[in-house]
Amino acid sequence: MINRQDEAQRAAPECVKGMLAQRATVSLGNSYRLSSVLAGLLFLCVAAGLTAFAPNAWADVKRLHKGSDAHPASAQQLADNISRRPLPHFWDGGAPFSFADLVERVAPSVVTVTVDEKVKSEPQFSAQSLPAPLRKFFRSMPHPQHPIAMGSGFIIDSAGDIVTNNHVVANARKITVKLKDGRKFVAKLLGTDPATDIALLKINASKPLPAVQFANDRNVRVGDWVIAVGDPFGLSNTVTAGIVSSLGRTIGSGEYTDYIQIDAPINRGNSGGPAFDIEGRVIGMNTMIYSPSGGSVGIGFAIPSSTIHAIVAQLKAHGKVSRGWLGVEIQDFTPEMAASIGKPNLTGAIVARVLPHSPAEQAGFRQGDVVLALNGASLRDSRDLTQQIADISAGQLAHFTILRGEHVQRLTARIALRQPQVLARYTKPDTTIKPTLTAIGLGLAEVTPLLRRHFNLDARADGVVITKVNPNGDAADKGVEPGDVIVSIGEHKVRTPTQVQQAITHARELGRKSVLALLMTRAGERFVALTINQKS
Image 1 (cartoon, rainbow, N blue to C red):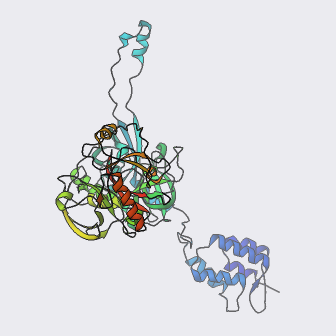
Image 2: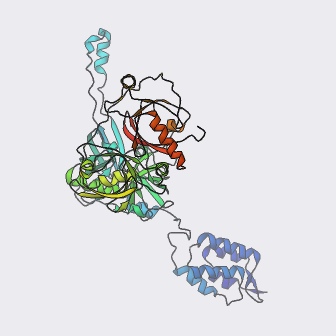
Image 3: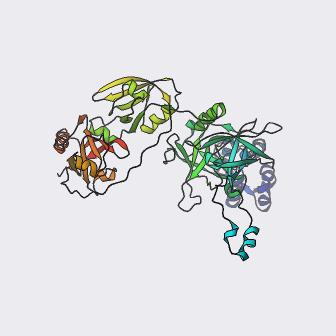
């Protein structure tokens, strides 16, 4: 046995030398072979502290541990490899050792937004109405103070432009912005867009401010790292990390935003703060959470950076956001609808109503048209169409590909400026009629003056009135109610229950499992694919 302790000590890192001093023997044979104790200790120490070696250095460590018939790297070469290769920031699998460097770089761009809110006027109460002993006590009570709200924001321009959520600054009397270095500024509200929940603030500083960089959110993938920085519960510059859980989320909060879902913990006060990618670029703005308890359960939503860019550009230029308007009421053209007309592979939006004197009417749109593409780009659903039209400036031409009946056509419309619209509110009447249900789970009757009064029908309602809905049927699940009027089945208008039944029979003969019905409801007109009960 030849003692190689001196050579091993020279080659090993400091964390190994103490162990080598106790026992390090090497036996000669066909290859290098460390003793089992030394091999285990050396391998564990090197693996724990030097996992991120360059590939050839790691291979040298493996050869020292396992032995090799090939000529081994010398101890000095291994030591040189260890000393001259800096530890990288990432493990081989992509996970970082630490987010500290990233946070140190981006944190100065994240701010605390404090809002002094307006107090709603309340009826004045006179102390003179109280008994004399209580008047002095009433006068000594402090007057109500302005409520304070807090949120987060981030600097997008070194000149002092800051974005946050509209709901953070709504009803603001005074807005204060606090930087990470402790400086405070009174901010000016340049504009808001409640539809996307984005607000733009401005502060004036004596020197340029640290601004964030934006990433293209279209390159974000599910599973990517995300780091959230903000002020939950007033705890400034709080950092949490997680991954992108989903993309393109529609959560019933605004028709112009498809949210990025993240699992980085965010809570009340994180609203308006940035969500960073692993390079420290903003991919979105943290806006809301889903939480039965009120605290973070790992489901948060961020407004994508592309939406922020588009809205901020308009707020800076005009102080408000203008959106394009076509003048149609539309629905998703669902797979069930597509199957009901024998076109199972089509996607897009179906026109439920063309508004009078609108760009759509002037362009020749009709009720029942299926919009397949806009300016050459295929449409996924009605939300996709709404968002794309909104991005078109008033006065510009838009080119549509539609399906009308069996034929594909092209229409061109000049987009107008969208105006706020208010829907009428209806009171649901009681129903007592108990007719026989059809194969689509509905009781039907012709529209008569009596039924028109009974169901409080619109004066223009013309078709077959639904008098009963099977509560356990497909129609009920899709929101069909007594008092709704069937205007047409497929391309054919209906005026009697017999015509509806004939349309059902025809669909069965074609092998279809549903019929596409146009309904006039209390909230407007819409299409519904109604499943045919095959046993009827």
